[in-house]
Image (cartoon, rainbow over all chains, first blue to last red):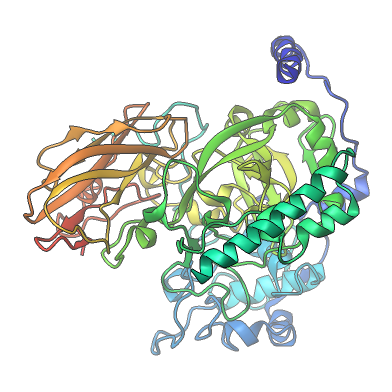
Length: 196
Length: 412
């Protein structure tokens, strides 16, 4: 009975909203302050519009890589270590550690497959260092991103990474990256005529 | 004898406790002393929170190749024992577990948890858990499956090959309701959903899907979500790969493009046809009895049984072959077939004691058919001896019965 009473306004609302401008129905929840949104919004899209001010180069990043303990898990050379491979190795030695799932090894160096360098900034910022996430300053994240991009032959050692340059970096996979077809539609098979 | 006596004593004690409970339990809330009594070590199991029989031993195990927790204390993928389960609901304690990159299970006080909706909306909103529970709710059954759940020659049991799928009843607020409350702006086409755990795992989800059937869930099988399943709040994206079902959900940002998060870039593919086979899971099924590692005691009657599911909708039918795929016959659906939910199938079978190969094949309500590995490879023109499965692997798992009744992986 109670649920029927709840559903009825829901249906009426759904019908009335179909053709007109949306307006709040329940009045539950509050508006976040601009500061609250800024503090929580750590998403960096491919166009980089959310990137904060700051800058860094590969040289700064090389020092930070060791200072911040990155080398402790990923190896001083960014490979041949228990944590995922960050820098392609010379290929002459085999990593003695089992490849963790999802397996990130020499053929699949972390984030290099992404068509946009912004994901590298975003992930270092939100997810590293392990156990001290979200403690790096923007300059430090720019520098570490520059270091990894340089060591994987994507940018030059002196290239400065900042909010303008990072989204413009041409990743090796910039053109070879298809996504699931858009827009997603209810009741449509993933791939027509697959498998037959 | 000793066991019986002990159980009898336990029963007497619990009856006494129960009697005490009814006296004080007249008050609207349980009194402090009854609460303490129910939670005391001797009564906890009998009164406060029931446990299964100690003779039932079915457990989850870490996915092959990586311990959980690992060397850093991160929890990773843990498989559910499908071979031991009945019906279509996975018990919460046995629900499979997977985490972004491997992460720590956070301990979140629900009083402190918030969900923020912002980005391309007219009215950014923050909700407490209590506020979310005041809103209209629904309960639906949905499976969640990890993209890594794939048949392979190395697997010996169905727990190893298919134990990264589970199904529960989820209760929560339709995401479309929350998005309408915030007022989605023209030009928006995606959302980014993010968790509150230390790595803040995030995925891009098409706005069309978000407005269609996604749930912001706080309930699972009649209880609050378990911590390993995202307590106090998770996103349900029915039929999509597990990585989209954001646990510890704290933020939804409405945006105008795919955001290519760390968890997203694994979904890109050079071949657009292969890229189409990620995100939404295709029709899939697996026989759980007889399955790898089990043994048939001898020829005679058996009930072949298993689970089927599809990210494209409800299961329409499941066909079974007992001769390695030459002939197929319809099984019976032995449970309701809800959209994007595990569905139980069964078929009578008389085993003649000869070697044979059992297979199951799911057809969903869209008419899409579960492929064999050979069919999947042939579609992409792979060499027949080396078929490769793209995207979320929904290929058929064969089980080989040897003449002594042993059940082996038919792919090995």
